[in-house]
Image (cartoon, rainbow, N blue to C red; front, side):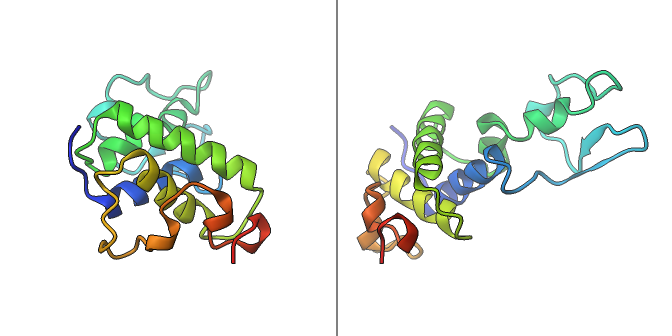
Length: 147
């Protein structure tokens, strides 16, 4: 397994959780016909069909995928490692029912620390040592049992 930058991995997982749950939206605009185009395309967008009247959201749907987020954050981990972390964080996010603004960030930190232990450096800024498990009682949201 490859060593990863913990902070960028946490940010990427949090971004994916927000995108997949429609809490955040990718950067882009609609044209007059209702087709959505991203502000910037990356290499992974090239194989996606161009938006049309029949499929106006083809690029929007792609920009919410783990593959796209992984490429945008330029992570050194494999796509499968990133997907595994995203699936776990997404599951915890949906189970938590906590709508605090930092919930996705806290869950991402917990999941990355659990699933990718080579990243869980206690001295890493932005990753409190008390939040290194995906047990929701240790997350900072009072609605899901935290402090």
